[in-house]
Amino acid sequence: MTETGPSYASRREVLARAGAVGVGIAFAGSLSEIFAGTAAAQGLGRSGYGPLVPDPAGLLDLPEGFRYKVLSREGRPLSSREGKVPGNHDGMAAFRGHHGRVHLVRNHENRHNAELGVPTVKGLTYDPAAKGGCTAITVDGRNNVLGERVAIAGTAVNCAGGPTPWNTWLTCEENEDKAGTNGYTKDHGFIFEVDPVDGRRTGAVPLTAMGRFQHEAIAVDPRSGIVYETEDAFQRPFGLFYRFLPDRPLGGTGSLRAGGALEAMRVPGVPDLSAVQETGASFRGVEWVPVPDPLAKETPIRLQDFGSKGITHAQKLEGCYWGEREVYFVSSFARSGEGSAADHFGQVWKYEPDRRRLTLVVVFGPSTDIQLPGESPDNICLAPSGGLMVCEDGNGAQHVYGLTRRGELYEMARNRQNIGTPEEPEWGEFAGVTFSPDFGTMYVNCYRPGTTFAVTGPFHT
Image 1: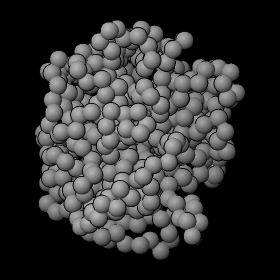
Image 2: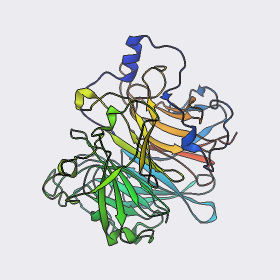
Image 3: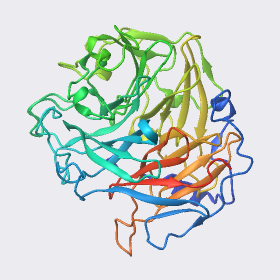
Image 4: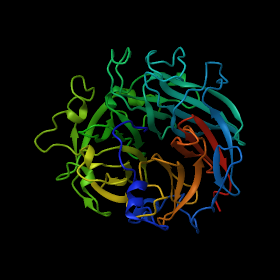
């Protein structure tokens, strides 16, 4: 999710130079079709909940009527006494528990040199030399923390993932280092299944058939059990969009260990998705090509030989989520200077399996207000009043933005934790936005310093 690489002119800088002013819609095209027919798509009649109110504590600005509670903060002791809360809070999901409880599973995107790694725990650790993994938080109906513990350890650069229909979390390693690299004792680049209540039920077992690459996020088709996967590769050739056809579809916890077939998407005539710039552009006859070597023993998958027709790539493939009968995935940005076919500040794509059709639904920016999001939109989830919540991961101030079905944007939260200096302030990105099963609480992470918030208020008004 957080990327290091060449410096670039941010979207705000580009628009400022162009003299862009005023309020605009940050997306070309309509979002209404994304939410049509969903239970959450019931009427936010106005654009947001009003201006953000500065937080006296200097942590999180919210609209009037909303309040937050800090559930967890890096460096504090885990209530399980397994060690300290790790840093680099990233992707997250919320699961319904008994008696009004909610179980949160939270990724930690820790690399080999992280200062606050996930503590190693017997029975939950894959590679003792790796510092990533997941922690789990259990809260009651009032968001009082009942417990916080390690859910899986010894994994690397756990970025995002996604929930399954049988209520487990699939955590994704955004890393493809082999054993012997950076001190690792095992190969990395896998997906692991995590039980939100008791991690020992799932253990620390890599789902190797789902591929070894720089995973970002997943979405499961609840009808077929097919798992869609995004790859966030930093260098050209960029990542691919995959599907995994399990041998035991919808078999419940542990069924993905039974294996299956991994395939990559080929859009005939479109080698790079960034070249498509017009919303509504649609491509029928999408093909799925078997991955020659899912374990990437010698060659990374995106570099493997997919035949004379090639394969379709895209820069910064990140968020992935399931709609009613289709899967959506996000390309956070594309930069021609880094090897993409064209520039954009973000795309949302829709793939309809029944029709084998791919459609560009949304293009972010650039001819919009410089204060609105658009550079590196990242984690996305459905909002209770319709539309989306979008985590911003760019330069300058960092926000969670809401987006109505009419394409109107509003500020939902602003991170006030300055990790820079008074002269040169810097704010960490938001990540892992998700809602409680009753849509009464928004949970969201601040990546750095690692902080997990529970936000409550009149979401349904």
